Length: 393
Ligand code: TMP
Image 1 (cartoon, protein in one colour):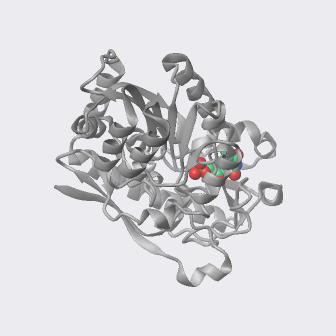
Image 2 (cartoon, protein in one colour; image 1 turned 90 degrees about the vertical axis):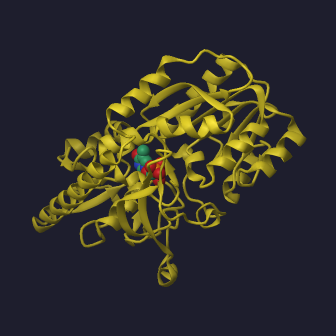
Image 3 (cartoon, protein in one colour; image 1 turned 180 degrees about the vertical axis):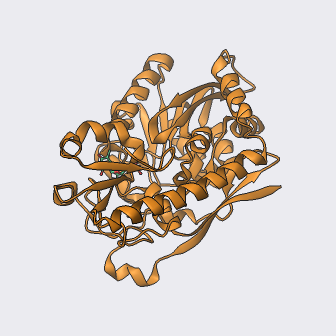
């Protein structure tokens, strides 16, 4: 039985950055989250149609952050060294930040967002502009043969039909092939009270406990888990086909499962306790921002992120508290943030001496930002975060 544990209210499409003309017909949906007591999977209670989120105006560019560029280069090199694959498929190739580490005849990309698929096509990479399913898996093996490696970052958790996902992976992967995928870690999310990981695109938030079960039903076995710092804590899962080849199971699999069991992630209480912490986080953030505003401070938000969309809409924070958002992504600049309608401008225009406090919308890039913004910090500017609890840094 699926039990709801968190209600984040009416929320917009996180990727739908708006112009003034779009305000009247903005799409909103009810964002609440449930725990399946049987499968242990945490998922949204209401899913948004994929075509509404992943389309030709998709805004997120994975290569915009140095942290992500480094992470993708590192894993690409590691895959080449460890597995020496002749053929690689990436599912959800975004702007090509991972595939550009491979020769053009070594890798095939799949990306449903037309504007992004066009970018990697222009770079000379074979790119299929489709959603992942068994039909496209069959088409890919017809054109390219079976794959030695399938890699996917921050994509599989976006797909409602997980059974279909792994069925299609079974089709496309060599019997001796390896599946590597990484998505935000539910364990880190719960521990950090980073409820902003819940938004339209994140249909599921994975625990290793739930993944083990889902994969085993689809003829896959997890043989290694790496804990990553990216996206505020992610797990990189390595899986092989159960029936066919023997790779030693690394102790990281059992260690991660035990860590999650110790945190009682197989029981409803962990989620009910989390929901209580989320309420406190909301109250604390509103109270901090309101207090600073009363003192006449100027507060902005740093990074127009999907995560901050959840926060601003759940906490009902608008231009009364946050003057504007700065973001380095050109196609977000000049737009309004989804739901909360806060203007987004470039850091060159908005991150200046007039700013007293900057809320870290992009808190998961904390280190990168701290290294970059020494001038702001040295002149007394302060960052605010809500992770793991609300505080001025
Ligand atoms: P993400 O968390 O969805 O990856 O989005 C991060 C956003 O933050 C992206 O739009 C780029 C923006 N950003 C900045 O504006 N400045 C920065 O220094 C970093 C690291 C990210």
